[in-house]
Length: 99
Image 1: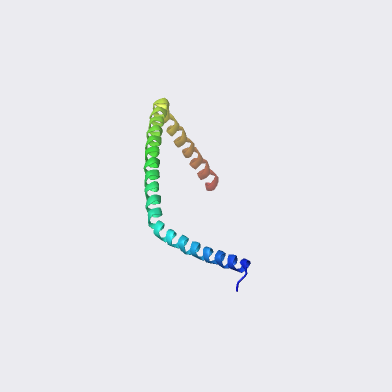
Image 2: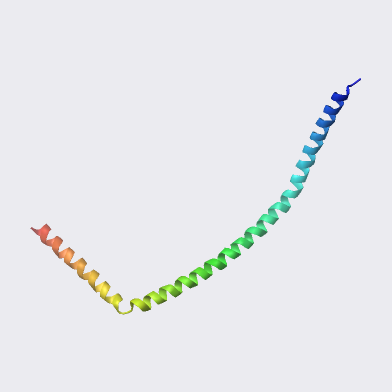
């Protein structure tokens, strides 16, 4: 004959076992649905990010256009100055190497 405490303990173990088996079965069945849900959410996230990137590109293009308009003809003088500095450096280097 079992005592009242032993009966409760065996019922607890049986309940835990059945719960674990039920949980595993539920996880296996829900796994496919979970993957589909994650795939759908990631697709929506990628669409949102692509839209935001497009807006960012448009804004950057506009800023570049405004910057080019602001710089205007001065842009050529910067190139000329840079080329003159390169040429002066090369001449000075030739003079120091040539002796």
